Image (cartoon, rainbow, N blue to C red):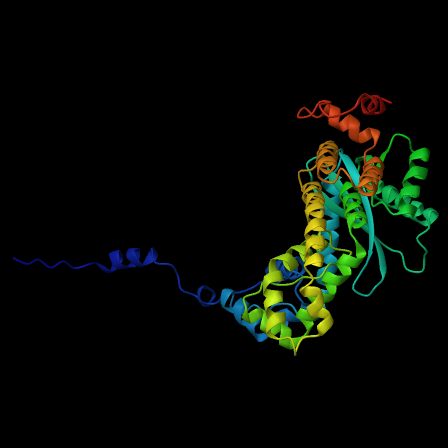
Length: 388
């Protein structure tokens, strides 16, 4: 038996009241001026954070990615990314950097290098006790010789400017170990005795590796690596026998000499095979150096020592390394080198010199106060220096 029901007009109207009203706004995604500014800024921040070229956001592929995500939105052009958006993001980040270390103990780091245009630049960074690092200032050093007085002026300027930006407590100053910079630290310490100043331990470890290197051996390995990298025939022949990459050392890249030597030793059987199979095509001087077993033994011997320094340097470069830890790293390396190169007095004296330049009373005191160490490796003289 079937039943039929009729719905009154009043009931129909009540039912329709529950349906959302369809308007043109529900079918179109609008982007307000404020929303566009927010999205523009996020896109610009992505470009800066990934070090991407500014013209990337004008490419059709990038636009095709963005527009389906929000139809009707047009990304900024490269002029805006390189201009007003860059200024806006920079000002906000500087403001955040100033707020972070407020009322905290901080360390100021100064370092200089050349940018892509070969302009000398000095940068100041601040590190908090929580290991947060902020770039506080970049100083254009063009037209100035890096004499001690100029470097001291830069240090004072960086400290003064940062003190105005945020209310923090500057406790220590760390720089590299060039002669002029070291002299600047000593002068600044005399004027501000409460400030702890010291040189970068990782940089001194890098200088130690350079002292342990034999230039002639390094030059021979570099010549071989360059030949097999730059010559099309030898590069193809080496690739055919299953080579791994050959690398070249760079003075500004720490541990790059170790990487170069390791790749040379790993590739040596393949290099020898290529030279034996292609004697007529390969330069005789290069072939002689590749087949020179004495050179290979010298590289292996040098690498065995440099590798120890490389491991210690990597520990010092770690994010969790404090000056208390550097004392233990230097002490541990000292004991290892005394066993491994006990007969090489020149190298041991070079190590002792670099270690003496690195470890200061502040390092010893930090080691004493660290609960993991507590004077386990310090001598009586070092304990006395820590308490002065």
